[in-house]
Length: 265
Image (cartoon, rainbow, N blue to C red):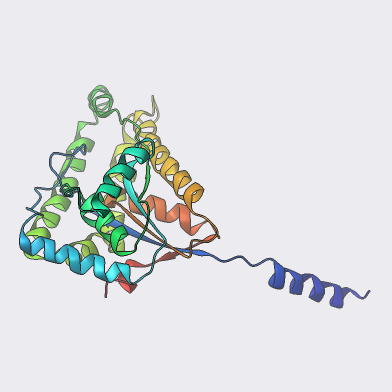
């Protein structure tokens, strides 16, 4: 067989038989509705039970339900799946009142509109050693790094607090998921924390690696729970996780990451 026809035959075979259906996945970074939370820096949240906010949540989930997603994934520990299933099934039969958490106010509410039997729990918690950061920074005359970090983090939170006060929930979510806002959050780890102890004990790099480890574990839970029959998946998670998880998914050719701005127009 001549070389050119052979190459054509091989390429045609790859095109015809090698393609697989990609799963579309929509990543929704959220603020945490409940306070206090476990984050070092967190918002002064609103009353999400009032009628105005409840109507906004209905509007948001009505739009998201138009995706016809076959799975909704939330920031709840993987090992809590059974208890979460119990609460969700009670909610489906009107025997459970949703807590203020966005996991339920958005996640459960949306899954019910999509007529799903389950809301997937995919979180995996790894403790971050905040106290070690302070000790190491002091030992290495790097407390100024933590001060600069605090300045940036508080400025970001003030912006988000003001946005929450003046905007609908959909507008807030659209804002915190802008590329520049996702980068702003991730830079706290890559611009500041990773510098702590650098060149000596690398405590900062270790701290950031633990954050990445948590997100890698979440990513592992995502790809292990998505089935070939899932054409569309929605993930609802704290905004700080989104840029890292998005990077992982964009480099897995089984997935097509959907831009939120194309859904919430």
